[in-house]
Length: 331
Image: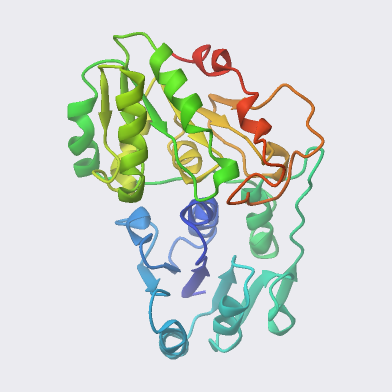
């Protein structure tokens, strides 16, 4: 195969969870040109990736379907030998179906998968030990490779590491307090309690997007921890990943920063509120810790992706997590 396209146009975390496909396809087809289609705004996470030939961006913010048609035309001209569609929504199925690629593979949950060359089941277990999402993704190419697993990997450049070296002069932790979903986000009150309880000499770096800058400011201001710095919106995805790599611990929600830490094999403390690790989206670092309530809650898990508000109005899946569970992992 001379040219392969991977499609994952969902969230940032989903893109990072797809990186084992890049690693494995490169390992089995080292001379093949690998392209990657993702959503506008996330292209920086694959910047200068050594195994990616071309990062293609789909802007869904305006003229979504006009851009979709243009993408189909571009892909038909590229004449891909294989398209691996990791996305399970119809729009990516349309692109795959009309791409003109010789071989197409995707999950059977995609409404257009009936037109793919090969369909693979995607099953999430709510309870018990099911496969990790990275393993579910790798099953898409098992028939073209083998059953071996590959890790998530991100590749910050020397410039990215140099940019954050100024923050590594003393022992530090990172805190990524936000999530796209309210019920997947450890409460602000509890973040404040945690940061307030840290040793005064531990440096705390708050990470996040520009939209999360205010939340980080509030946590710093109300915790009164003098050695805290808000880096939300000031670092790129890869710069944040480079900073995470050498942290004493990275505190995250069940969200994209957890996968960023895993892709750097960085130490990570992952807080699960409304969701559970058994869904298969947990951390993959060698040094990882799951933090969740010790109480049996009949309402947990309440959903795969979380909600904008707690369906039961109490949010006990977060509020019953004890501060010591976080502090025990701090330097």
